[in-house]
Amino acid sequence: MTVTLPPDYRPSEDEIFMNDAMKEYFRQRLLHWRAELLRESDETLQHLQEGGAQEPDIADRASAETDRALELRTRDRERKLIAKIDAAMLRIEDGSYGYCEETGEPISIRRLEARPIATLSIEAQERHERLERTHRED
Image (cartoon, rainbow, N blue to C red; front, side, top):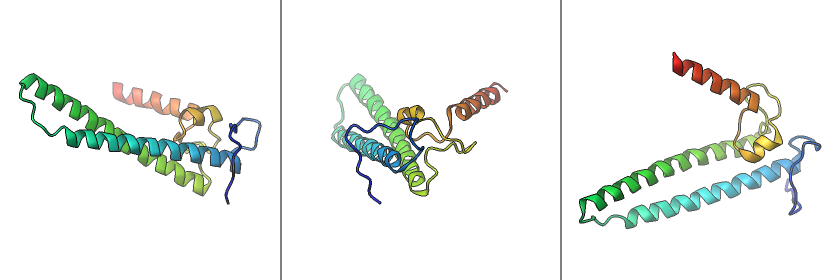
């Protein structure tokens, strides 16, 4: 089923949660974000391939190596983010998108706007972070 969104559509708390328009809105946001990350990733790859020339100066070489390492870390982070975006797209298809994996409660629209790949409500996320801090301190 195809849903055409008005250009000014924004999900709101007073509409039925995860109705077709809302799902399509987040699907489009995720697709746009994914395309942007892939474009940036392609630019990083091109830059890394161009940077094959050896720098004659040892300080320049060290600086270039640091830059390449940073670009590779960024690319790895982007790759992980794309996997999370793909997982969110699957949740839209199976109807579980927008619901907390832990409680089954709806994740707030504001949270989904800020982090469209969110799988936990704010409360569940805070619980997880508190638990992580507690276990790290042990």
